[in-house]
Image (cartoon, rainbow, N blue to C red; front, top):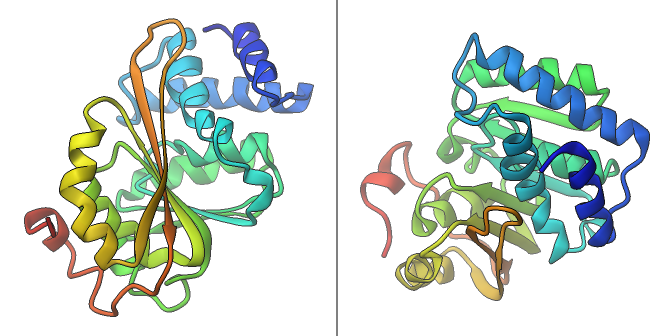
Length: 238
């Protein structure tokens, strides 16, 4: 998917990109490739693949969720900024917070935000378990997202504590997500969540399966969650 095809594909979904936004994606791609030579940000560096598997794939959430209705979004384990930075470019009004445990990724994201002229973007070098217990952030976000970070039962413990009551947690997964969901149902309920929507679709061109789950926060997460760093992954609630 080249930049022109990317623009057309998004327009077909009702997302019209301005020249400024197209340049932001172009600069994003160039910075990603440039910095990737110094640090391991992504295994995908071909332009067509970056536009499809990183940019378009990240924005696919907006085909099913109306981001104009949200004000604040928190991205857990965003790595090189996916999915939140492509979403932010398309929806500039969003206040974005990104949490990642790797310091060098934060350095890249800081430089990226400056280069792209992004405002209302904040980066936090922290473990998700610690961040979720921070009163300044706990249950403060309209929307929390995570893309291919961990199993759904683990993701729920890391992300649900950050979602405000009445807000939503969006999980982006590839194939075999239904089995993960069944295993995670107990955890999702325990952390105050309820699955309200599931969207399954094929990524254009390569036609690989994608799944998006929307989990609404119906009640507060018990105070003891998330547990200590490393515990959710070692002893997931299933």
